[in-house]
Image 1 (cartoon, one colour):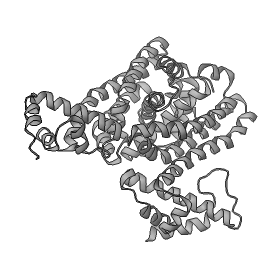
Image 2: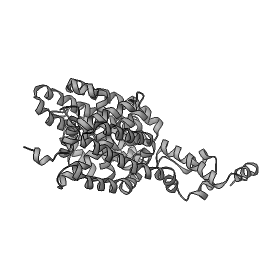
Image 3: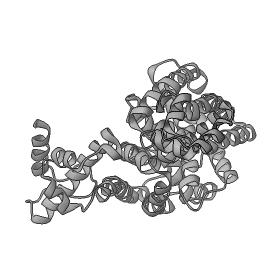
Image 4: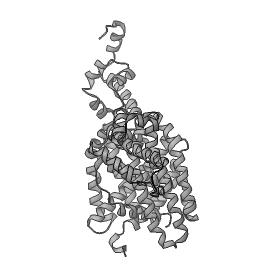
Length: 208
Length: 234
């Protein structure tokens, strides 16, 4: 490393935890913008104002950094998404429009605010996305589809589990559609309107 | 390479390869060959981009997969960027064509016979989104600032074209509850979710059951969608 005494000693004064947080923040920004495979540790280091060597003192690999910056955040998000999806489905099945709308509002808020992280983890790199999805989402979704095929769909046959799976995907997808449109488009549908429309469809449909 | 020669055979024999409403099996004129080549190159591009991602996909590999030389590829597409765009826009435009083709059938049916047509709409959307999803992921999430431009300049026009379909086919009451321009966002989101799940897990999708479930959710909400299908089948 080039010896740049003044600057290095100034950097050394920063507590390790603070520097680590700075690296994680920079990593989050880069991963969210460029995805998993499009981000290089060198660029994260630059954005965090540290050398790559310093970065590697805190994190052994890009993957470790991704885990810390993106995946840990999503661990809680995943549970919240599944929990609220279930709440939306159960309320809609009871025909309780008010409660459907309430649960749907919470679901949309989560998907909308964590779309960048979800995008980085699931959709930015086919290889990484597969690993992440099959490890983090799939088993829980399958369990949910199975355990709720009873309440979603009477009967225990193959179809019931399949339909439950499509119902879960439909609820997630409706929210994802609006969230994508809000993040990438120019004319976002307001979240109130999105939530209202989704709840209307789920609780009573819009007619054949 | 057996795969590329198989593709060449496919190119010379098949005229309408999944693109609804095009090709009528006439003798291959120069324009037919051009259209077929374009289609083959787009197909090859989808498969190579899906497998390798944006950065590692090479035009040489795409040309090889399509059974042509790189020189031929560049005659059709000036750059990797242009080919990528065409590869993703082709199925999007195909989707609009699918919907346009299904549109007249809504006019002639009674209310209760609308469902099978809506099933077809959902099945078509599923198949198109399976084609589009991997590249759409790359376009949006490998550089989110560029992704915004791509979405606004390329995806939104297709959304508008597709929502025109719902403006004419939806009944007034439905239009009031969810305007067509929102409905297309909802439906694409639903199908994007299923297509990406399939892409990430290789879980097979029962297209008929999926289409039926989505049709019923949209028309009647979850209660009806969750009713056992075997009992409602004729």
